[in-house]
Length: 309
Image (cartoon, rainbow, N blue to C red; front, side, top):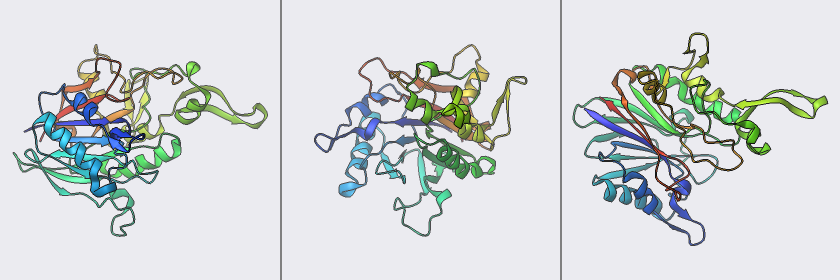
C-alpha cells in the first residue's frame, strides 16, 4: 500500500507575534499542490502549539484536514531549545499511531533517544514501521551531530524506519546543492560552515569554508569521489539521493528559499529511510514542491515521497 510521506517546516508554525494568533492559510496554500493526502506530515516549528490547550496544534490539524480532505491528528514532539518543537500529523484513515512519547520533557519514563520517535501501522496492510521527526540545531554543529547519533540506532533496526525534518545541514557530495560561502555572512559561515582549521596566530578560525556535513554524513555516510558512493553511515539513505541515482539527469533541488547573506539555497530538509525501509521507497515519487512566489508559504519547501508498506 502506497503511503505518501511529507516533511515541511512551516515558518514560526504560523504564529503571529504582533497579535499572538495563528495564520494557517499559508499552510493550506503549501499543501494545495497535493492531489493525494499524505499519510504522515513530519512538521517543524510548531511554535507555541502546546499553549492554551494545544490551540496551535489543533488549528494546524484542522487546516490540514480541511485542505486535504482527510482526518488528521497532531502529535506534538519536544525540543529543548525553546517552545517550537517538531510534530507529526497523521491521516487516521491511512495509518494508526501505536506509540508516541509524551511531549513533556520532564517525563522520567522517556529516554532522550525516544523523543520524537513513534511507531505506526498501515491500516491497509497491517504492517508496522517506525517514524521520527527532527529539527536539528541551527547554531551548533556539535549539537547537530549529537542529535544524529541519537537517531543513528534506528538506521540498522530490523523495523523499517522513515524520518525527516529540518536537519539544518546538508551532506557531502558535489551532486547536492552547493552554497557559495564567499557570499555568506561571517556569522552564517560560523553556524553552518566548517573551517579548515584553527590557528591562534591567525586570529582563530581560518582557511576556506565548506558546508558542515558531519551530522548528515554520520547518518547516510560520507561521499567518496572516487567510487561515487557513500561509505560508512548509520544505515540511512537520503531519498533525494536515491531519486537522483534513479534519474541522474534530474538535479537535486534545494529545500529553502534564497536568502541574502547565506550564499544561496541549500538542501537541509530531508526524508531518510533506513536499510529496512529502503526496499519500500518509491524513488520516482520524490518531489520538492517549489511554489510560485514570492510571497512563499514558508522559507522552506514542502517535500514528499511515497513508501509501499
